[in-house]
Amino acid sequence: MRAALYLSAGNVVVDDVPDASLSQPTDAVVRVLRSCVCGSDLWSYRGVINRAERSRLGHEFMGIVEEVGDEVRTLHPGDLVVAPFKWSDNTCPACVDGIQSSCANGGTFGAPGTDGGQGEAVRVPQADGTLVAVPGGVSGVDESLYAALLSTSDVMATGLHGAVMAGVTEGSAVAVIGDGAVGLCAVLGAKAVLGADRIFLMSRHADRAAIGKAFGATDVIAERGDEGIAAVRERTGGLGVRHVVEAVGTPESWAMAVGMAREGGAIGAVGMPHTMPELPLFQPLIHHLSLNLGVAPVRRYLPDLISRIVEGTLDPGPVFDTTLPLEDVAQGYAAMASRESIKVMLK
Ligand SMILES: [Zn+2]
Image (cartoon, protein in one colour):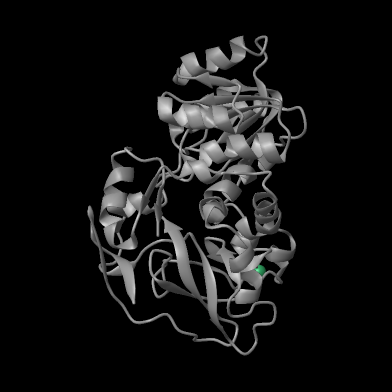
């Protein structure tokens, strides 16, 4: 089969690899219908972190179950499924606590020795605890929903998790730092899933801001740093916002998050950079801020997000502004690395 391979910084190709196949009785093999390129895939592409030559790429995908192992109970060949970017058994103590991204038997697609999402098929470990079947199946779900469904594999669930960790509820005012796919999905999650009333999106890119507004942002703020903080405070009677989603992860974005949170506010942080900021804790301490950080437990959110998409009440599909065939994956990486594209979907 064909799959994307990392060769070196700036050099990604599609080549022949061994077919995905069952290795454990709890595995499934999924034929990929859609996958995509993630901001985190760009770290190695830019040469910021090392990656093994010819390692597989991609951790977000949706597709059709092709084959299941003897111990798989809930899935059947032919099921239309979405995979979270990490697999999980959904039964260990961490999973039961709703943090499937810390599963004792979990792992990440595209890690050494695993199949990546950017390929024709993927071996999915712990299939019962990982994959979520889409109600209606292949015949009942229009292909036009595939982009939205694919987004739940990572960015939609990650953005929503940021808003959940920031404590967003009905009527909340929230600021979202980051206008990448995750930040935009945090806006949508805060609005359409959690019922936020006022949403400040920090963005200086017209195309991204337009999607943010369509997703529910009420105020787009182009200023950064102290000016960005001042702009949010000005619009909140000097108080700042009670809920902040940090979807970048740099020292600068963290400083903004802390600076614009009101006394007793909460920051939900899902921004995952290659270098974590050293966070001075004095400011959060004296301002009574709650800091909630975590790699999104996508599996926890998947059933609800998928239902909303199929019912037509949630559409994160517009975060994909470019669609390419798998064979053109190199072009997709280049478009995202140059910020020409927000998020690239592969068919
Ligand atoms: Zn688990």
